[in-house]
Image (tube, rainbow, N blue to C red; front, side, top):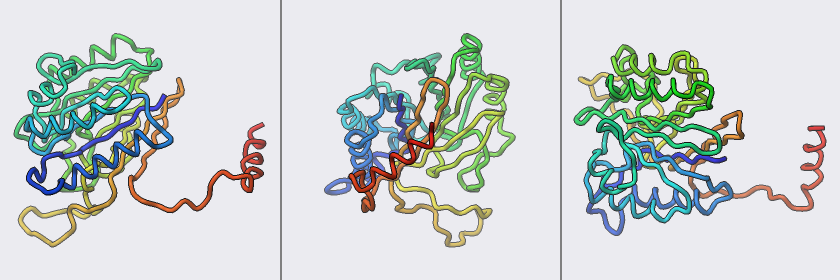
Length: 282
């Protein structure tokens, strides 16, 4: 089973752009690659910041494009979104206790989609109500492989102006809910606009890069009182993730969406190499 993940689309950043805003162009290109490429997923998770201002018009534009996908799409909120507009644009999306937080089961894998939005706050949030919901879901099926998606990574990645503080209460609450839950096969996030891999409470944690322009790769400390001219946002290509689940192992692939030259194709001239590589498996 293939699970696609897109994140941080930020539709509406340039609402009056003509003929079309850059983020929408990048979004179209990403969807085209996902749908028309060789690795069409069985489902697609959109892990938040689908819009830039959380307005209904931007959500409607996003839903219009996602509605053409030939597989189920599961939307989530990020700090730039609003729950009300998301649920209006995607009325079949479940919610719990007022949060866009729900579960999906496909291919023997349980998928939990979490809500880390606190209106008016750039960083993440995970209150006691949401943490209790997650803890209850994990206790229900301790032996079923479970994949968690959330917008905000609960880790300090080193991108100083985007990072949380490690001691934030929401991170502790999330950590307590997942600690010792060996059925979790992975935690995948967005928000940071860069590809990142780490561990959190013994679980593998990945961050998928954005569809919108990426955050510059700069791990130096930043001083909020001293602008130093550093790069903040770049035009690196949009990127998406494919999470491959074979029933026991989750493997994540990231692909940039851009033009490239094909240097080799599977023709009779390369068939011998392919056969040799398969022969080594015996």
